[in-house]
Image (cartoon, rainbow, N blue to C red):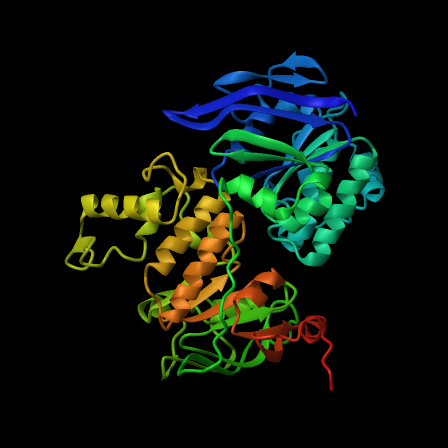
Length: 505
């Protein structure tokens, strides 16, 4: 294999804080090179240097053996470097085709040769198995399709190195299989892929080599075939990580929430719920299993007051809900970890400390007169306490939340919601984007909440997570709950069949 890109002593400082410190990394042609590290380890910063968004404080970059300066994204594109960000950089009001060609010019004509370019893009899509509909608007296609558009956009610009930042975070298992097929086709043509992920199973499946970063520094580079998940996890967090095994609760207490034949857009199999009858008791975790897109999002939004059901009855703490609004559910002590932290969980241009107290500004600890006068020093003290308690990696609690890594953004949501000591916790993909150490911490906190009497409803596309945490498991398929199973010694085959819509008679 030939060397495609090499970084030597790459360093990036923000004020007095090192995001990257003397990092050395070599990416070979035709390999999948995984970057592994905790949230805040410096992975995204390093990739933003490679694509020209950040300028390094010091260090050198070599492209195919020649020293280069990547001082803009356009320079990275000229060198054949493309990146698919965790949060896609697509313009939703434009079509797939328009997004792909945006900002490119491949000839001197002042006119866009639409038909000719479409044929070129379609040929590229067919070559790599990138199934997209060029004339559809971005808002009308799935998350998996949007990712394929981003990959196609990079390839159309001539990418020979493709950086994929948490590419499987929002994908279904089937879409992950499709993505891995695309990656293998790319490397078979001697293109290189940098794969950033926290999911050990995927890392060990797709990688050729793995480089571990910790606190902004290179720890070690390993051949995939000469390591295992345990070693990688321990190197990543700097200590031995002992996996937790949680006892399952079987004694049902009083229900904290009950749904009786609740529906919302019941005619839609993938964006609605159809006569769902289910309950969550105090002191239990009910896991919702199922392939993403079978009504889980809508169910979570109904039981947090975001959506109003079209029929059926919801009873929360023995009171029938008449009005569905988020503030009423918040006042009823329901906490919500939403599936999209950026759209529903955080205000990006507000600081870390401000996001941490969004739901608490009327409390005596943080204000006078139920929110009339804010205690700024108290908010700062509280913010520092939460930063330390939840290991939120940021330069300062005054930093804007949008500038943090996805995992650290998620920790802010978790801190805010779990510190409320809720009666009901609705957790939707609570560990999405979190590293193994942070994931274990979240799992422990959810079990602590359960053991203190909180009812927890867990929505997760990670079947292993559902199996690990749930006292009972409900399976959703096409908007319906088609089976409920014990979380103790669960019938995995039966649950898997139910997730595919097959139920034993």
